[in-house]
Each structure stands twice: as C-alpha cells, then as structure tokens.
Image (cartoon, rainbow, N blue to C red):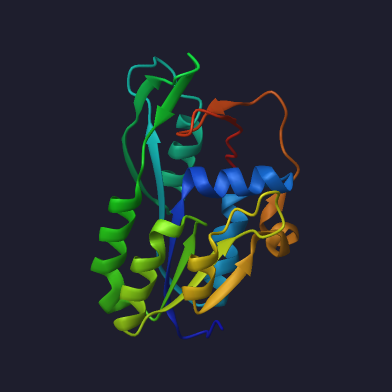
Length: 194
C-alpha cells in the first residue's frame, strides 16, 4: 500500500493515538514513528494535534510538544475547556477534528497518501473527501483493544487499515510509570518524549 515515491503526510490525533497505545499497553516512540514513515515514502509533513490546558502553570504534555516541535513535527494546539461532569468529576474537552480536517484538505493536492492516526468515526467524511481528490488514505488505530478504538465506518472507508498493535515492535516501547498528564478526555495519560 506504500510506494517509495509517494508524497505522504501524517495526521496524528494526539489524544486518540495515545489512548489506543495505552489500551494496548505501550507508549509511542515518535522518533521511530517518523523514521518508519520516512522509510515508507517521501514524508511531506507530520502533524500532531492536541488541546492544552492554558490555566495550568505546568502542562505535563508540554515536554512532548516541545520535543515533537523540535524534531520535525508540525504541532497544532488550541486551548482545552475544563468543566465538571454530572458526577462532579473534573473533565477536559478539546476536540481537534476541524483543525486536522482543514490541514488535510489544504495539503491534499500535494499528497499521494495520507496517514490518519485516529479511530474517530467523525473522520469518515474527511477520508472520503481525500479519496475523491485522488489521495489514498491509511488509518492507524486498533481493533485489539476492549472495546476496539476504531470506528467501523472509518475502517471501512479507508483504503488501508493499519493495526496499531502490529506497529508495536517498530514504533512502541514499554509504558513509563509515574509520568502522567491529563489528556483532553480528562483521563490521566502518559506522554512520550524520545
């Protein structure tokens, strides 16, 4: 599905990819991830999308964002919104779907292949729109978690589905204990900065 002369771009839904890797029991090594896709084609861009809490003095995801930015990733962030749910729990919301979609559509004329790291079914229309422009789309997520992290309609729309667990030996490493940050879903997560 990958050709050496393909111009390709990575679109990483940070919180979604992190949640999928965590569900499979490993952390992403973003240096190895970039190297793997540079090997698979001509990498035009690698985008990483995440929402950040602005009112906190220290954001535990900041070291990861800084590392990614310094190491060739285009970082797209926006302020996350904090709220209290009906059970009185603190939650954080920060959806990056629109930003990812706009970037993918703008870059589409200069791509042969887009790789979307997300299982979010909301991206199915984006995949379809990219395909109409002649861009092949691979989606990276997992069916092996309980419950599966990939929406069935997104998996079916993609030209190629890549099981994240199959990439574990190539782009993964054991999770680190004690290095947690709050992801945009409000669930504690662990950043990985190579």
